[in-house]
Length: 403
Image 1 (cartoon, rainbow, N blue to C red):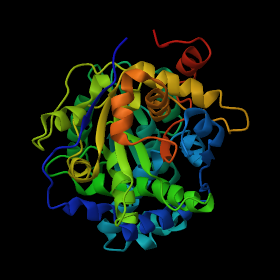
Image 2: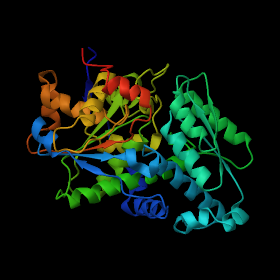
Image 3: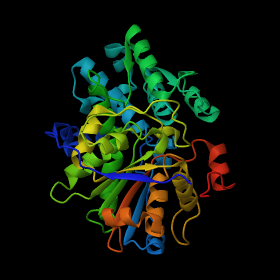
């Protein structure tokens, strides 16, 4: 059986200037924008008190993004807000004026016209961009990497996007989409991967993700929890992780929780960077084969990397069985706990937390992280069963079981 790998954060700290991207005021703007959508509703924060007791934790909370805007994943929060910020900037206006009603109005068409938003995706981000473009009367073009599943392709195509599956990996799809955007009149790249010279839109996407973290913070207070002791968050390019860590580092500035960032072992570029410990970015190349399709990214977001270097406690590289275990546990909860239908990229936190609490093989990491009966854990189930066929193979038929 493939082993979980982990490393503590011993990287040199920076001036931390990117933390301001996730300032509470910036996230409040994103939240106000999302609230203007008629489809907006706060997604559930599942209180798994039975599971916490079973595992020997004080509390366990799972943010369930399978309910987000009817799209089965959180990603739409980022793409939609980036579009609003882009349009606001083009018009010389403040994003607070970019309400859903205005963006879908004839007035917007007269003042702005129409843009084509380009993106690369393993599924959820592209669907979010296509959905937002469709709702706002804009165009979208979506490139998917080889091996992408038909159900995710179909969901994007349904939103009116021009969508193709390319014979290259995710990171190469990003480069192709960007080249197309640069050649297209009113073409705009909307990607949560940041690189030198392309950082404004990824920062806006991260702020959009902040809506989810902000809701979770409020819901914890409603549940009687002032702050979690541990936040587990998964990473592909690291935009979600940077957004969540950045938001809570700002929210609990005087007493931050421990942040644990998890990756798919086949695409663990952040873990590789942390292991090298020099603060430099590392790339992971190849086909990046993992069931965690949404995490199959080998080139980190530069903005997120800066936030994560300064605030993450541990980086963990997880084999596929960890996620599969988490999917089964969330789908068949302890009696009395709510069920969370969590997809491959959503459930890795559950699998890791359970393994740390129950397996002697990882007692050292459990002790290092400080997980015990006093711990209140927050994690994010970022997607539902976005690949229904594979979800059933894993949850019903036991695929990727622990050997």
